[in-house]
Length: 109
Image (spheres, one colour):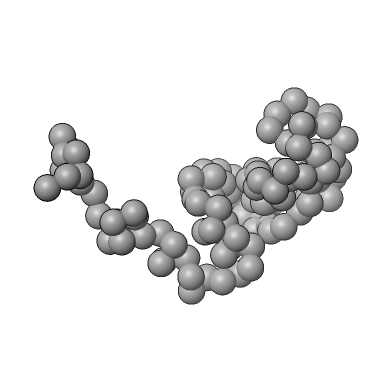
């Protein structure tokens, strides 16, 4: 069973990440028709910007969740297939990849 992870650009310029087991064209049509209540219903029309296909639904769910947690800039790099930019866009606000503050830290010296 193939599962497609996709990114849509909504009419208001925001991005929506989702996944589907059906043909992607049909799923985009459903978004544009407003068949289901949800994020995109009030932001139509939507445009398909990116897809990835997975054989395992668990892999697709993990990827969708990962993308949903990304910044707009990182989603745009993925849409542009600029994979080299993704690690730099993953850096936190202090500019250190993967750095975490100790518990109870306020971030101030």
